[in-house]
Image 1 (tube, rainbow, N blue to C red):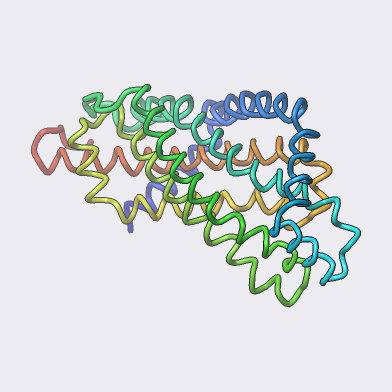
Image 2 (tube, one colour; image 1 turned 90 degrees about the vertical axis):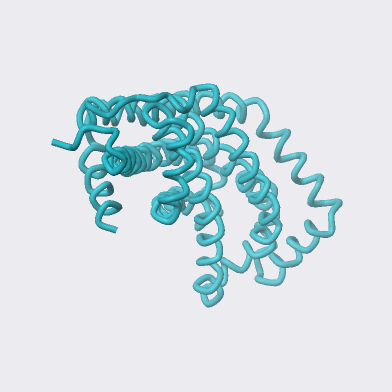
Length: 286
């Protein structure tokens, strides 16, 4: 626990470093430009497809009846854009995570290596292509799990508009995504934090030995990652401002994920150095 909190403190102190802040800007620009162009050309078609699906599906009819039941018939037009947003957010966040993992994380590790771990031997147990393939495969698994839970969230969404039920249902909306993003962040970030310095065997051993604290960092990062999502989840009227809200949330996700990369980097490299010292293969820390 001491190592976990020490790594947290160092990440918190380092995240405002100008070089680290730049690492949030690059993924933000790439993701915002890419998704901005995508939605510019496809938004109306996506919303039209969602409306067609709602009109011809049992789930869609159930949603319309749920809104009628709570007296919000005039919000029928919002349901289709809301579904597009609900499906878009996980994909957007996954894109930002992959960009952070493949572009920012190697720079974070080099930054930490130069400042705190100059004597730590680099054994190159992972590669950029390995990181990309590992990240994509893990992300696809996570997105599949999210897709399996989305119908539940869509059905429960109208109940968020009823104040007594909001207090009961909103924790569920936060808990499941937090656990899923926590697992995804833990898997992707740990690989990238150790790719340069650890051998493949060392990485596997460290992930096994430190599974609980690494998963805790991932879940904490996932919990922080729910904060930007609440910008649109709590206010249906923000759907009309989705392009602006999406840009703001992309930067917030980038900042949170770069902080998480620092946290994972500090913890993993510290653990690697300690493991090598135990084995007598690494010079002791100064």
